[in-house]
Image (tube, rainbow, N blue to C red; front, side, top):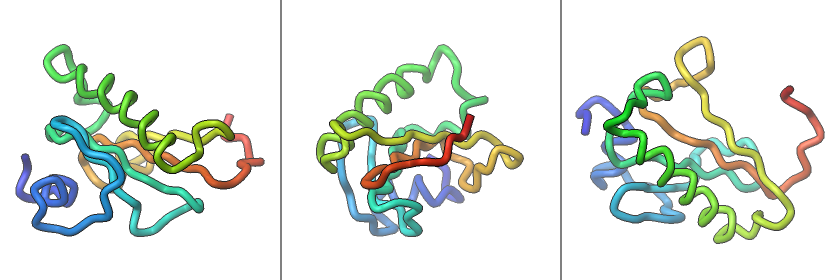
Length: 115
């Protein structure tokens, strides 16, 4: 955990959140500034700064996060219609919180193609 990290403080419970899914390694919660009708953040409980900080010692958290994304999609009932998952990496990639996290967006039809 990092004392300066807002997501670490949410994981610790010192900052409240609206939890969607939680297990021993992953926490997911509603984004406070949603970009879609469904916008949930999926965060490893271990502080990993970004995708660039993933290594053989912590890569299991990435797999666990992907499994949690499926559970979030099902809980929010967006699993059958589809959803978007976004990971921003670094300042130029739009990452504003230095803690690896996944944005799960759904509840709407995304007509704009990113790539």
